[in-house]
Length: 403
Ligand code: 4MI
Image (cartoon, rainbow, N blue to C red; front, top):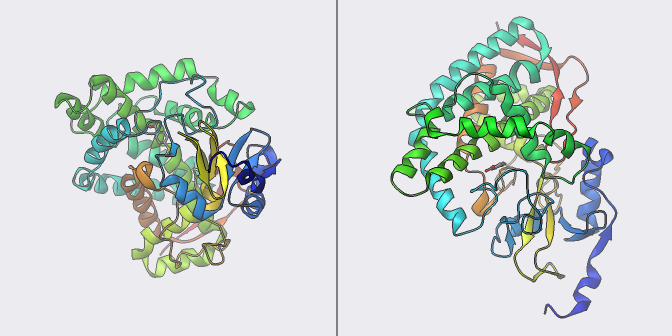
């Protein structure tokens, strides 16, 4: 099979650049082009493969044997070039190493360990929503979507309260450097010498509050499941994966409701649908839009022969709006069946933190549902320019208090 050169005659070569300004400013028309070009496409700009259809995206994410993560999940191949941080033990590994790390994280994030966090999340949500409502008109990014996760999540992980804003340039670094070495990459990486040592200090055993999720990770070092250094890396995974994702998911949720006021009214009529509504946000506008896998060996995929150690760009956002899979995919509809969306990924690397992320977002939206009659845009939202995240950097809204 692999020696049959005719297989590649079907692979379309495209000059679409998924990291260009035009693409990042409005990716959806490009997603459609990528999907329509074929099940798998060659991106001439980067000499990598790409897929944007739901069927292929989910197939790749469920095939870690052929499409590995050990080469990193960005454009750079860790097997042939270095990276600015030691690889994540969770995100950037394959079985059996991944399995060991994932098993620890699965245990730490067990529902019984998260249950006690719910009340605190809700109290902080109420406090922040009440404060925002006193302003009436405000920037929802500055008042809600940034400060809320930045308070409740590091509290749960167990790090000290000071200098937490450092987690924002760190997250920016983690996610922007998954793209090519463009200006966004370079700007994000600029503060690395200050930010990375700060993060690693906060991951040390002694820096974590007893009883916290971070401290739970170190219990697995005590029992010998992982080494002390591996425990520090797994705490780092919390701080890498847990801020930008939730900040921008919340921003996207508020944007979706501000732009679709009927959907907010629908949710107000039945607040028990809040989880379902958030899944629709994750389908419609996933914050983490795209990432890569690296082929571990020569493989045949959707009629195309792919060599070993090749990068493939995976568009989560395009898969979530593939009309081959979804009815009226461009419609934000909290009543639709969202099961199967890949906003949290799928397969062995599917988001391990999604329960805690959901608890955060649901607590904030629930506090709002109890207090906010209507959300409307009070100005033009500003888009974040980012290699892999889709988000707003400014979201002027007016919220009307319920009487
Ligand atoms: C979902 S994004 C993400 C997951 C894990 C890590 C970073 C980002 C990490 O560093 O482990």
